[in-house]
Image (cartoon, rainbow, N blue to C red; front, side, top):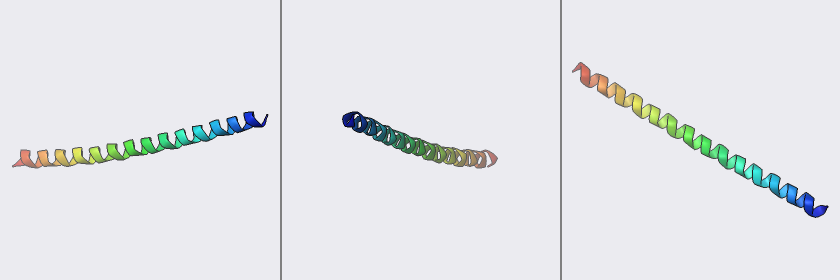
Length: 53
């Protein structure tokens, strides 16, 4: 009985860790996406500036 309880607690802890690392990956992805969108916007502005000259 105790062994089963410890096993279950261990599985819960592993799932929590996996969820946290997944959340961290999602946050990294969102940050990267935001950065790329900002770069794209700057490039578009440069392109418009050049087109006007």
